Amino acid sequence: MPEPPSRRLSSIHIPELAEILPEHHKHPDHESVIITPNPYRQVPLRYLGYANELGESAKPLLPPSLKYLYHFSYAVAGTYVFADSAKCVELEPPTSKKDPKVVFCDALLWQTAASVVIPGLVINRIVAGVNVAAKSAGLRGKFFGTMAGLASIPLIIHPIDHGVEVVMDNTFRKWF
Image (cartoon, rainbow, N blue to C red; front, side, top):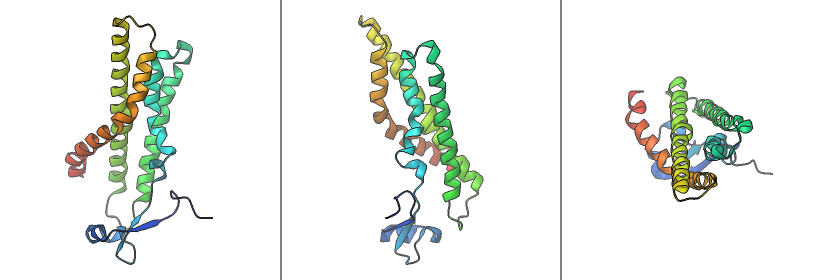
């Protein structure tokens, strides 16, 4: 039985990429590139990073006795961010010249911004805005905001990821 993709070391043939990457990313044939997948960036573990977006969307519908679920969603996302950051250090090739603390901090900053803080704020504002608009239109209930928050999750992920990548490339990654 073959090993699942997230567990095996795979190599792909991309001659242009093999020419520009450092030696520690190259396969011994020097024509392929070694890619070690991070299991935290693969489905289904990747979805744990979105737990707080679900919490933000559902928050208006939660009765006071269940508000702890909102906080728990942030605990799940935070645990995911920390675990992913640690795995990035572990997956760094042994010949890498990068300081493990810098690798960890890079992943931690990126994941915190792109998976927790910015999406949580965006979803929070979408839910609040839709609920205000629904109330002013005479619609009752907070269901509309929750549905808009949930529906917006797939739409905001890539733009936020890209924006955080640009900011990180022009700040932290230049400094370290």
